[in-house]
Length: 208
Image (tube, rainbow, N blue to C red; front, side, top):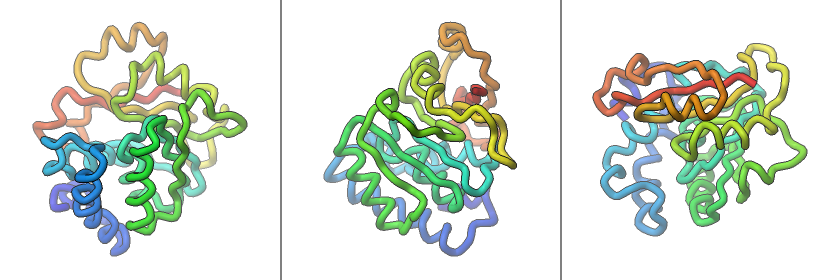
């Protein structure tokens, strides 16, 4: 938690409580259903929570914004973002039901009222549009854009940037970006959080 508070100083008492609960909740659930690698669970706040919150450090979402987390896995980046933005609605989607069991339990235990979960693939979602899609290390950018583009609204909600895909990725992305036929805005996470872990980790934003 100290690491989170190093970069974010204005959490409410409720947000602080929710963030503090994540450690025990994920340790407990990870014993039953492995959603975080064993070597990473003890670095939960750095490798998962703070990494997810790099989106919050780079983007401001207006109240009422609707966001889909594609391939949420254990709830990242969706759960930390939902804590950070209590007035934003999040749909956390994944094709693996047992992972969503963990996500649902964590959302309920922390008292998150702005999170719903859905057992589905993004490409199977119909008749619903979102202001943004977020994702973390789920698939190549080409695939993520193919899945998210049909789900995005065409015009921005007041106070928001243009609808688009915001994804967290690492490594050399030159070929992946070229193959995606997109022109994302690329931000280095180390520009937001000066921690060695975030070297060669990036935040990509593809406008609708």
